[in-house]
Length: 196
Image 1 (cartoon, helix red, strand yellow):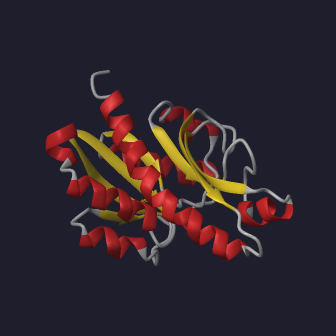
Image 2: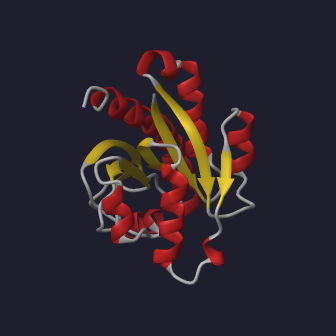
């Protein structure tokens, strides 16, 4: 069985989109894959209840309980590895990961970013796109590397920037596309890596 571990920090909307697709398409039968666990660094993350609603095991590990980023990442790796992950999915996990963590899951950790990478890495992507006068914005699923918001691009979706757009309005339209392409990218990864 190809186990997926999803990391969240907040609402878990992308995690829920993946879980819905996994159930609807019966990934367990079709791909030999299942979401083994959802782990959050925030005990009050709303996505934990969503995951439980899908029957997915949940865990929390607060980064505030650790003296260093390295110590937290080491403990998080131990939690993840108990599930023998085939794929680690970052779904709104608001932590910059240490190089050791990224190296440990090299080639099997992916993230979604709310811009058309390589444009607008980091934060405030929607406002930056509006401020630069971009005609389009979008979202990117990519493999995670030690360099923030870099790594091989797995999928992208383009969203128009409309006249008078606010960052919140653009973010809402981009999020709709995230919910489409992230499950697709996870499915494609599982299918592609299935025999390796």
